[in-house]
Length: 119
Image (cartoon, rainbow, N blue to C red; front, top):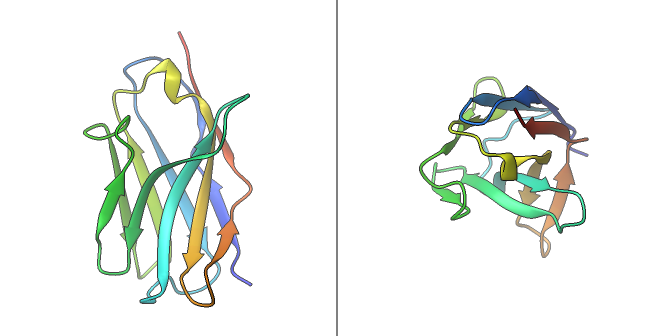
């Protein structure tokens, strides 16, 4: 069972930056693993923010393209999300996700970290 632990959330003013990190309990270097960040705002469904495959193919939600960057450090088993030019609508709980594509797919989730963008 993979465990994921997020860090780096907090309160930031509009236009500011935050960097989220996710540490996995095992190696993330696996052709079946897709690492991602999701977010959920109050009253809304959880949505994909960004994802990255083992061969560094990246995917972003349209709302964050050009502002957020997902990256991975295979040596440290971590995935990070650099968030720039933050907007109030980015306020949400952000969750780290590992999707194992085998066996019809299994999702592992972190506990979530709150990001609040407000003046």
